[in-house]
Image 1: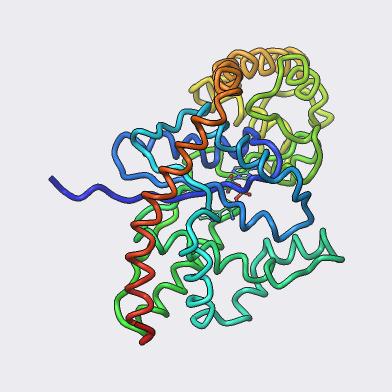
Image 2: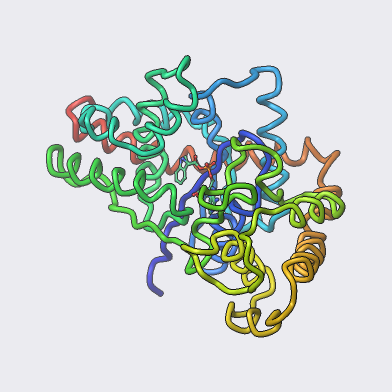
Length: 329
Ligand code: TYM
């Protein structure tokens, strides 16, 4: 039997999971579980690079673990763990930093955007963020990294770092590939559909995976559209409707032209009402599963501890190899 591919990805424990995270990343993660060896991480160290409250960090990590399980990750098949519980991630970050030109870090879009948003806290961690992400991926000899579109530049840089390192110090790392979903790699904000849906851009711009029905309805009915009245997919001219059609299509598993046909000569209001109803129904199992998991924190902590042990064993092998090839061992 051919060797299974290895998959690695992560989400930061900042804010709640929204449908952009789900459609761009988590949904792919879940489908990979059947045929690949999957390792999914809660990347707490990355979340320290912007202002945060240390008092609530532990709770947010647990919330993310609950979200992973409620969305359908299966700890029997998949390794689920917290980044800071495996020290190899920070150690490899240092080793990779000598194979990373500063200019490459300075041109990263996310670095530029976050620096603009947090002008009083442009810390070295924000600049070095992609090296830690490269360490996450390379430690596991990863073949596939399923992410949304905004992370492709970071995975591309990971490939460059790995190639440079392998060339300089000898074959050490597998070169990973980005996998984007066919549709939904960039879900847009409900308020400003020219921008991606992001938890840092306000509560009303996102639908969260565990959102209650009333609030889903309110947000969808208030979503930004254009002044026309046709339910037609046109990314450039009608970005709001195009985004809502994409969401409709992905949650109903129906093609966009079919949905356009169904809503021909119907109003934006009718379309939005039906989309809200669809989301309320489709997100219901997630809300229910989350309620079941709340109160089982001890069990979830055991899953994370076991995950960290299993991840640590794989990560340490790669770390040792990297140190040996660099002349440290
Ligand atoms: P994060 O926590 O910002 O986002 C988690 C995942 O969700 C995807 N995503 C979206 N997809 C579609 N539409 C959107 N509006 C949208 N917003 C977010 C992201 O692309 C991502 O896949 N640096 C990473 C976390 C990370 C990581 C890694 C990922 C750390 N180490 C190693 C992969 C491999 C991040 O901040 O994701």
